[in-house]
Amino acid sequence: MDVTIEKQGEVRIIRIGGRLDGTTMQQLEAQFLELAGSGCSRFVFDLTELDYISSAGLRVMLLAVKKTKAAGGRLALYGLNDNVSEIFRISGFSTIFSLFGTSAEALAFVS
Image 1 (cartoon, helix red, strand yellow):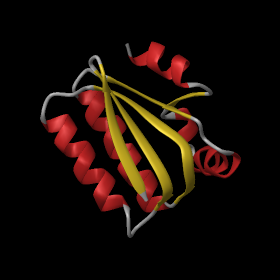
Image 2 (image 1 turned 120 degrees about the vertical axis):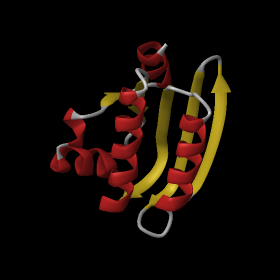
Image 3 (image 1 turned 180 degrees about the vertical axis):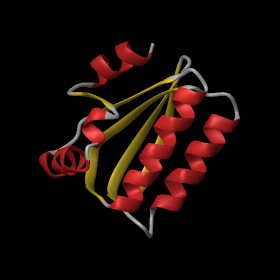
């Protein structure tokens, strides 16, 4: 899994590529918690390069949305491929997250 973080004003764009599963989720969790702990509360997750997400990966995403909401912030996801989108739909996570088709839509939502 590859994770890159870009700062755009008050928003942190977190790009995830590859597989988000039990062996890689700790890396994302640690990076997110560091950002949240430093006061960041507006996040956009770019999932255009995410090939697969497991239940462990979903748990990290749930942690992110809960921490963000508790801090009064906003979180958006965009670029889900068909496989990842299906996992979000089946798990019910598509009702928990704000999902968008483009980065512009996601950025507008969190700004």
